[in-house]
Amino acid sequence: MELLKEIVYQRLCDMIFAGDMTPGSRLPGEFELSRQMGVSRVTLRAALSRLEKEGVISRSRQLGTVVNFSAKPRPKLLVVLNPLDDLPDTPVLQMISGASARCAELGMEIDTVSYDYFTDERFLGDRYIGVIQTGCNFHGEEKLLKVLDHCGLPVVNAMAFEGDPPITGQATVLFDACNAWFDGLKYLLRFGHRRIAFLLNDIDIIERRFNCSFEQFRTVTGKHCPNDRSLFLFPETDRHFPETVAALLNSAEPPTVFYSYKVPYARLIYQFAKEHGLNIPKDIAVISFDGGHGASLLRPSLSTVDFGYQRVGRIAVDVLMDHSSWDSLEPKPVIHTPYSIFGRESTDRFITDYTDGNRHAVARHSAKRKNLTLKNNKERS
Image (cartoon, rainbow, N blue to C red):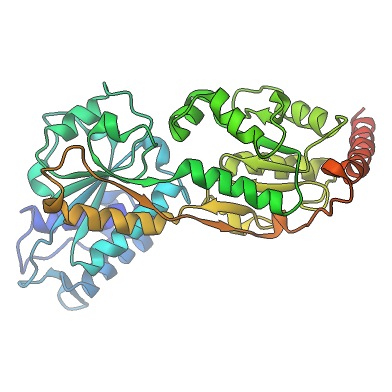
């Protein structure tokens, strides 16, 4: 809903500032305008109210909605989105929220557009003063990179992977993903966890995100905790993921916590726990590497390694506005942003280790899981 309001707001700005309307002219009535834009009057009114507060329009019962004579186009930034990111509460939309807030403070506006929009002929570079793009995992042949490279505008990548800057040649706001990941792992170790299961994206994504081979990733993990291959799960490619989780929890040495690459994977464990009568965090703890996706709204609330995406958006705007300081630099600058670990209810249980490796505690919880699983299986049969 918030994104739709933003889109309507931007379309109204285009109507007013792109020459379609002149100061002193009237906008169509709410009913007609909402029909033209294909949105509800409630959504339209939110956008009109924002324009009124900014002094762009005046509204009255006698005159309707009138464009002010004092209205002048404000500088605009363009945010280029992956179509798959056009979802509520994704990290990208949190980043946009921060970028939009910073633009408002600087007296600027922000437009958002999908990657699909871009061709050499349709890119209207003269309407913007810079571009923030949200792509990652580039290989160098993407058309988007070619268009941005020739658009004549400063470009900042706000959602890149570690290996992207040398490929894109763009100024980059980057998370220190590798250190953040292992700081999250150390957080779990401080709570007494020794057997940790990892829910990961596909291997290629992991290698690009952490800028190392998967075997190197496993080796470094093994310096902190067991790195058996059975502890590395891939939810998106495992067609029998629930069965895999059940088998792992019923093994001789089950994990005491799932460390998820992103929140949707953690939600799968929440669903599994609900279906099998397991308590989070008493029976199994859960933490996610990526904030957002309503992590704090889950019950129990989900612990996360959080990158502060709204802050990232604000930083990206400031870096873009300071482009004169780095335009001539090669390579372009890479700015590493801070991250935080938010411990919430899903990991709020300390495992007291009275033995080497915490075998006694693990065995006790494993037995409980087996009984619950067998009970559920009998009920289904």
